[in-house]
Image (cartoon, rainbow, N blue to C red; front, side, top):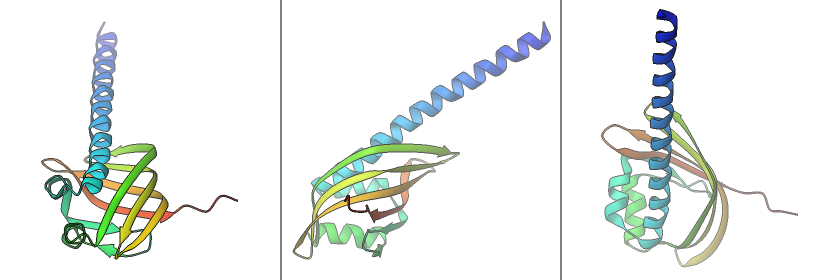
Length: 145
């Protein structure tokens, strides 16, 4: 009877943990989508909350920015996101860290120059009190032949 009881407790714990992980994955994926929407809508309040103060934001052109610099460029309209479409979002949990990978199609404008970008990206979230982006990096997808 004792081994069956231990097995039942173990299965219950694993099922609860799996459900909890599923909820976390949904929450962080939702935050990621909201972050991109906030970039298009120039929603500084949301971005201020979701981006960690120690953010490392590396654009596809290799330029690395801090949270302060990135938000300043958005505020001054030196960087304008016209539209962003996401696909193939995948998330892996590592304790209090979540790593999202995916593809984004971005129509943006930087320093007056309009660009259309097809990017593969990685976003790293960390949770202390709330989930926040601590790192982002993207690279241009190879052109289809």
